[in-house]
Image (cartoon, rainbow, N blue to C red):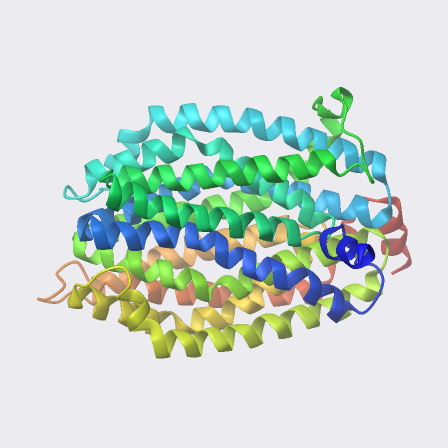
Length: 470
């Protein structure tokens, strides 16, 4: 029994055994965990939309892209550390593993303080630039202020969970998320409905859950002494470790930043269409996030599997794992599309009782269907490329698609679809533009993968030897 428990909750060596079994064992808890993590923001929106109203729902929609933009540095450090951890863990280089983990803890503490100060000082400027609807401005400011003041909880959870996943451990982060998600639901209803705290109550419930998640995962990392022992020396930032983290993670952070910046630029267009459109988009995107889960999940799975095997010099296993991950992701994406078509209206109805918003949100879901299938291509193959240590190629693909394709297309389509009913353009304009951008990302990522440059980007001695032999 102890052996099974250890296998379930301990680190997983993905360099041996069936790729399918390795990926299933790692991906299933990750899949459930991603669902649980999405419930944080989804429950906020449902409770706020039901108990406070459509203007409050619009306020969360206004605040979310800005909040996500502030999290990109956490994403950059987290993705870099996860790839680095997976490489060193796969290669058995535990001294380097210890330094990577210690340095990441110090870096995330520094980044958390800087982002919090910057965010709170620039809050009003951000909301003004993004043209937050007047009806939602004050509530969006309250929500953002509370979330930005507690950014450290979100940052530490994502970094610590990334470290655990880099070592092939996905069950513990899942259990943490399930526990804190249940707590978040209870607190949401109590704070918003019971204590009548409004949108501030939803923000407080979220940050409490995120902080507890961070503490639990940080404790787990500190107690993982089988492979490393953190000391003061490992916590001191080293130039070589910082350089490697930046090389592996910064391009992903830049890609995420560009994506959210483009979302904010497009949202500026949406905000001119009125708070009703913003509220519909907010509800739709909460539902949409669940359809995106297969891509997100298997992107992480592909990165960890590839990272460990590239680190160990097992390029032969990477190809098998790549197509296994893509098949799993695409199959689940098809299932999600069917569910969205059948139950989309009902899901939008969880956030609001306004029939106009429900119908508008469902039309947006239908417009996004091609994206849900295309994402499985870009995320699966992109995860392999990034996991191998080649983040620059994926970054440039995303940057070009988001800036050259998505933004101009959104404004052009909106201009061409102006009507008496929608003077500023059809509310689906931004989603049609996103479909086009995601198609470009999928095609370009597949071409880049086939070129094979990513095979030479490993950071361990075994990876470099394998690349030379290849």
